Image (spheres, one colour):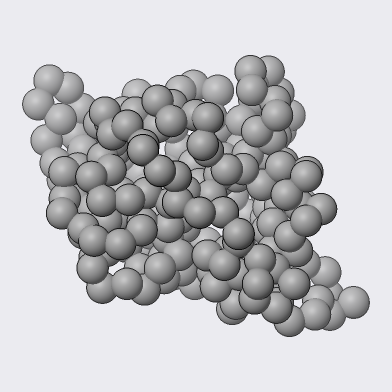
Length: 224
C-alpha cells in the first residue's frame, strides 16, 4: 500500500517504474531557456503515484507562518526519509527511482548538471491558502531542483512556481503550470530566480520537491 492507495505491483524483470518512465518524460519536456534554463514536465510520475502520495497520512500543517520562506516552518516539514520509506511503499518507490543510475544519467545528459557525489532529498509539501515564497535562487549545495504538482483541483490553477528575472526588479516572467503530475526542473544558479507569488488560491497546494544535494548537506536527517 502507498499511503492508502495501492500501487500496481512492480514487474519483477523491469525494475522500478519511476526509473523506467522518467527518462522519457524528461526527453519529452519543454525546455525553456529564458530567463534561465528550466524544463516543464508532463506525466512526471507513473500512473497512480500522485494519488498515493496525496493519500499519505500527513495532515496539512496548522498555524504555519507565511513570510516568504519555507525554513520558517521547518518543524512541520515532511521528507521521504528512510523511516517513511519503510512505512509507505510510494515513498520507497519514488526514492528508488530517482536513485537509479538511468534517471541520474538522463538528468545529467539533459540539464548538464553533475550529480556525482550528491545525495537525494525529497520533500512532501502541503501549502495552504496564504502561502507564498519570495523570489530566491536556491542555495549552492543544491545541484538539481524538481517540483512535481500532485492535485487536479482547478482552484489551484495559479499555484505553480513563478519564474522571475533577477534583481533589482525581480520581474515576473510567468509560472509553471500547476496540475496533476505536471512539474518543473531547474538547476540552481545565479539566474534561477523563482518563488510563489501572492496568487489567490483555495485548497491545499500539494507537491513534492526533489533535490540532489552535495554530500555535506547540513540536515542529513532530511535525506532519502
